[in-house]
Image (cartoon, rainbow, N blue to C red; front, top):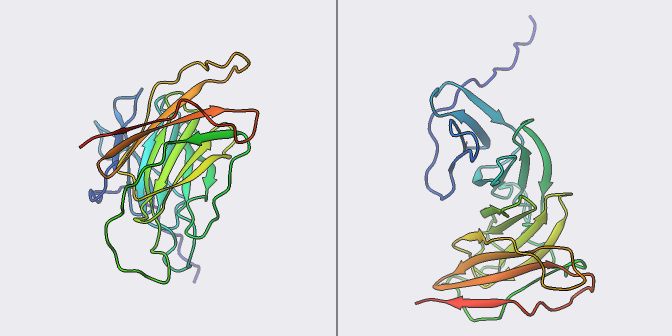
Length: 244
């Protein structure tokens, strides 16, 4: 008796709408939507519910997705492995046209150390935003990817985790998948959104400046991301906005 061939998934119905950013319409193909359920990213047709494609690669439940403004890239994030302590909350970047994985990003890690980026400077003014009270535990709670957002030109991807104390914010370069910057925030970010890309005001710089907005509690703040040949050079354009 020969072994039976593995079953092939043909259609998926339903998804968990307990999180934001669960469904996206494709920016250039209005009949295409991108969503997730379980460990699968689903590319489906709005007009034909039986036309679906599945992107396989996640090992745990997907918690958020994002589609780049051009529609060429998809990013999906998951929760860290429930069986391995201090494991990665993995982010996968997909090529929409080929449906293939191009980057696996593992920097949203419970125990990863924060390093200072040598080529980029991402700064904000310090402010106090006390996290909600929680019981002190000896081990960090499991991490999941909470927010993902592409820059307007698809050059960068920003992502944050769900940690209530010391949430991590990462920015990756989509040209090569490298980590452009990583920083700690007081608590979980409620949103991530890129502003307009502007030309650099520095005479010797040909690189654009990027604005990234986020929120922590009742405070909304802005980051400037700018290429700097001098490692650790401070950006004078950082600004913080607060609201009641």
